[in-house]
Amino acid sequence: MNTAAEQRWAGPLSGAVARLCAELQPQVSERTAEGFGEVLRRLGAPLQVAVAGRIKSGKSTLVNALIGRRVAPTDVGECTRLVTRFQYGTVDRVEVAFHDGRRQTVPFDPAGGIPADLGVDFDEVSHLEAYLTNAVLRDLTVIDTPGLGSLDSDSVARTEQALGTQQLDPVSRDAVIGAEAVLYVVTQGVRADDEQALAAFTAATASREAGPVNAIAVLNKADMIEADTVEGSGGELWKAAEILAAKQSALLKPKVADVLPVIGLLAETAETGGFTAPDAEALRSLAKLDEETRETLLLSADLFTSWECEVPAGTRAQLLERMDLHGVRCALEALDAEPDITAGDLRRRIRDASGLESVLSRLDSVFRVRADGIKAAAALASITALSQASGDRDEQRKVHDAIEGLLARPEAHQLRVLEALTLVAAGAVEMPSDLAEEVMRVGGSSDPGEQLGGPGLPQAELTDLALERANWWRSFSSFGATPAQSRIAHVVHRAYFLIWQQLRTG
Image 1 (cartoon, helix red, strand yellow):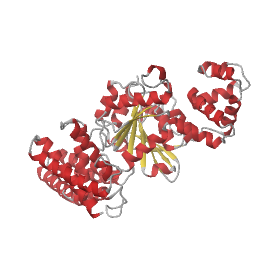
Image 2 (cartoon, one colour):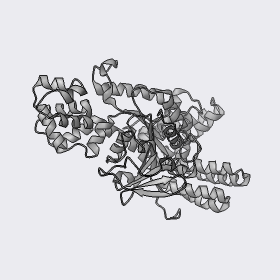
Image 3 (spheres, rainbow, N blue to C red):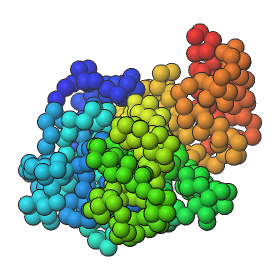
Image 4 (cartoon, rainbow, N blue to C red):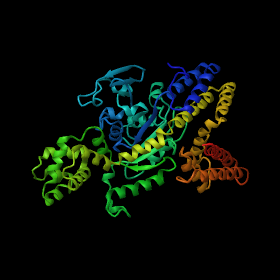
């Protein structure tokens, strides 16, 4: 294993935490040192994002779209009841991880997906490890989890384990509890167990609740929304989806940074090569049908596959399986507007209609951009938890003092800000709504303009504003704040002061 000095980290914060961890290892008990070794391993790994949600919410379909390959099983079967980690590898392979620590490689099925039948005793299996050459996995490990709400209690237990809600066996803990962020999939109705699952989410081995730093939700299957029933949508499907997503965001916040509408099936079809040239030609044929026949076909899935027309019923059934009726409608509208559109451009239109681009953009802005801070914060939480579990007061003091020394450095203040944001978002420290919103803004971006609530303002104005807010929060910390609020105020004051220094010298 690479040493902390040799390893490549997500950024300077992760590197600093790794060096601290390596320096502490010889000073703590053997058991704690072993735990620190696991923290180091995770620090050197890509950011790990768990995709979670209720059964039949379309998690695996979305996983395939994110990876860009139809590899996660979407039909209910043996493998959909297992946690599967998709990570980068130089050779495509699937490993079955057993509870006793054994590993067994199994081949992909002929279509390139995880096989429906693993050929092993399912009860002995802990989880699956899928190694893929897809470039997207170089800096993001995606963890597909079984669905909450399944009638299969074992599947529920596996998902709860992946979310950190139960004590794990060592093998499973190493495999899934390392998730540092969560992409939560909901459908039209947010239920109590959705909120409970998010509240229970933990990062690494420490209790770090999901929040705007490390959690995003998506409203999947947006094409199933009855737009006419959504007030303010004007009968437009995507507008209705955005309205519902905003309502769900209000319900789930502050546990998530955002709720975004998406059509996972269209995203999967467009991203994984599921849309082919023959599909494009079939759609061209449908576009040329008379208006009455077209409208009849699009009334329902049954009519689309059974109504008599020139396009073979089997071909239409394939289109329906890959795109559903809404996707077919979108493609036909694109063909009506541009009859000579190429198959590649038609695929891109389908991708645009899926909403995937907004999800990927949010993954970048919430997860990838913050990966260094997220991983470092999770690692510090793990280090603290490991030392607390030791029961050795001297060991606890050494770890505490080392962490406080690290956090006192200006370059590490981002970790204090993330901690403050999480405390305020989770309601652990109550703040007036306008101040809570300001804490979220300061901790929710690395861009000074966005942090100061003035994107686009001249640098001189931003510099003055940073100093003004720094002084205000310093005053608030001394006059009018509760002790808990005062601690948050000190963090925000210093954040603004560091922004002021950055702007003044930049």
